Amino acid sequence: MTSLSNLLHLHLLLLAWLLAASAESPEPRLSPSEQESAYLVLEAINPAIDWRSLYPDDLCFSGPHGVVCDLLVDEEEIHVTELSFGYLSDYSSNPPCGENPHFAPRISSFPFLRKLFFYNCFAGGPVYLPGYFWNLSSSLEELVFIENPSLIGHLSGEIGKYASLRRLVVSGSGISGNVPAEVGKLRALEQLVLSRSRFDGAIPASVGDLGRLRILDLSANRLGGELPAEIGGLGGLLKLDLSKNGLRGVIPDRLIGLREELEFLDLSDNRFEGGVPLFLAWMGRLRELHLSRNPLGGYVPEIWEGLGGILGIGFSGLGLVGKIPASMGAFLANLSYLGMEDNHLEGEVPIEWGRFEKNLKELNLENNRLNGRVPFSADFVARIGGKLRLSGNPGLCLAAETGNKSGNPQPVLFRSSLLASSTVSTSGGFHVSHRSFFTWSLCFFIYLLRF
Ligand SMILES: *[C@@H]1O[C@H](CO)[C@@H](O)[C@H](O)[C@H]1NC(C)=O
Ligand SMILES: *[C@@H]1O[C@H](CO)[C@@H](O)[C@H](O)[C@H]1NC(C)=O
Ligand SMILES: *[C@@H]1O[C@H](CO)[C@@H](O)[C@H](O)[C@H]1NC(C)=O
Image (cartoon, rainbow, N blue to C red; front, side):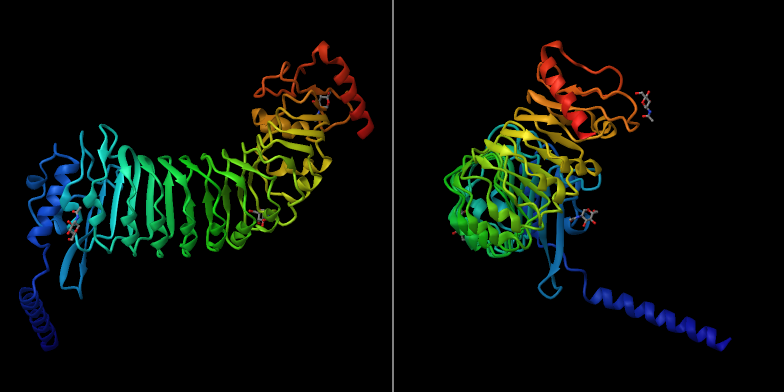
């Protein structure tokens, strides 16, 4: 009995002590000036919402999603550290942007701001990146603009002063002008994504100074000049995407410096010359390799032995000549996508390519000069369906090998005049045109030779 009352007594004491302690040091609150700055920024982004009456209390404790605070300076002060705008999903319902959103000058008066994020905000009338934008907090770690087509202006060289920046993302914007050489000062940068915008000029060689970079994506801009060889010094890079620009010259051999980590390489839709680079043979971690639509020319090199992890290859429209290497079929066991259309490849599709059947989901060899019988089973052809595209190769055919070898082989011919590329049929009637009787007999002959 006494022990129970003692315990109760102890509990009451503890409660009293806790109450006294919380009264002594109240929770830190957001300073009135930072609270006012937050209102002004919210009002500029969406004037239609009455932010002050919706969120009259401390914005750190009862503010909208997208306004994030942190206890800082030895847990004594509370500050706004993240501002995210633009509705993303029910799970991250940032403050929605209004009809005519703009920036408020007070956006540069959050001394501890670490992240600033705008998604699908500036999509109406043009909005300039104002000069004061480059007066943001020097603690900034993430500056992200995604899908803001009416955001215009330039990236100022002042960007170089955000030494803590880890992510700089401007994707889907109207931002134009050069990529400032000062980005090379952002030594903490892990992601540099300036894509689907209007950047022009050359890629600054200083990008090669960003030793911690994991993702470099400058795709779909108007960049020109040569690919700076300095990028080969970014040994930690996982993804390099420079596709859809006007880059030219030879792809520099120094990119071999990316071999330890690089998984994704896309240089498609530029004006690179000088053949498919041989250093690719050492990039054993590659999973995606896209070079399509560059006037590279030359042969398909024998670089495949160490590249068994590759899932997708885009070699379309490269001006490739000669035969397709059998080694691709032998080594690329996991290949799921292969595009080699619109080249000048000739000869047969090597019998080793039959091994692709296990994983291949899409193969395009249209518009080459290939001939002979394609070494795929009827099962595979039926499974892959319209994703097998072979038209535009006057001598190419597919023998129907139905698993029981009793029936007559019935080749299907691939001629652009015969088959729309998306309709390949092996079950039921086969399409054989009388105009291509010669090729038909040739394929039939080849079929007999092989079996
Ligand atoms: C940026 O901040 C500095 C120092 O606080 C100030 O002198 C300057 O006028 C500001 N620039 C802009 C464009 O607001
Ligand atoms: C192919 O894929 C399998 C399963 O994902 C994986 O275990 C294997 O290592 C891959 N092959 C190569 C050569 O990377
Ligand atoms: C074997 O061939 C015949 C005649 O072509 C066909 O009707 C039948 O479905 C085939 N059987 C199998 C198991 O593919």
